[in-house]
Length: 214
Image 1: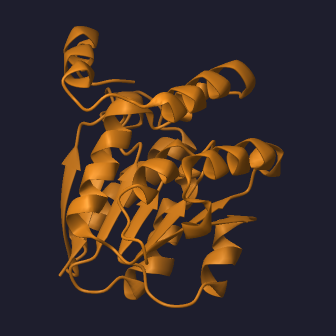
Image 2: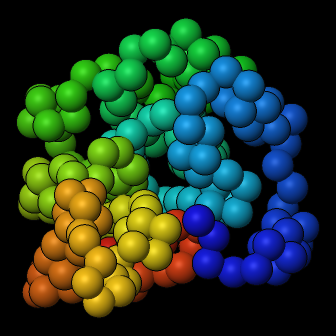
C-alpha cells in the first residue's frame, strides 16, 4: 500500500534518478516469475536506500530479507570499494535468479548472499554492522532487532520496512488484530521506547522505520 496518491508517487519517481536497465529487469522478472511481486522495494525506496548508503558510507551492511535482490543492488551501489553487504534469505528457489542479478550488477564480489533462517545465520556472522535493513517476516522483527542492536556501533543506522502494514497499524474500534499486525505494533513501540536509539517513522511505500543508534 502506498500512502500518497498514485499521481504524486509517479511525480516523485519521475523526479528521482531513473532506474537503470538492470533494475528494470529485476522488476520485470520478479513480476513475471515470482509470487507477491509487491514485496519488491521498487524505484523510490531503492533510490532512497542507495542515496542513504552513499551518505552514510558504511563498511558493512546487513540485509535481512533479500527477495529478488533489488534493494541489495541499490545498497551495494552506495558502498565504497572496500565495503561489503551481507544479505540473508530463506527462499532457495530464488537463488539462481538472484545470483544472476548480482553478477550482472558488477558487485557480486562485495555481496555475501547467504541462504537459511536469519535467526540462525545472524549469530554466526562476525563483526559489527554499520547499516542494517530489516525486510523479512514481520513476526520476527523484534528478534532481528535484538540480535543486531548491540552489534551496531554508535551512529549506525537500522531501517525496518513495512512498519505501517497497509495501514493496519491504525485499528478501527472492534477490528480484530492479526498476528503480523500485532508484531509490527509491538516492534514499533519497542523502538520508540528504546533509549539507545533515536528514530523516525517515514510514510515511504509501506512505512519505513529509520533508527540511529546513539
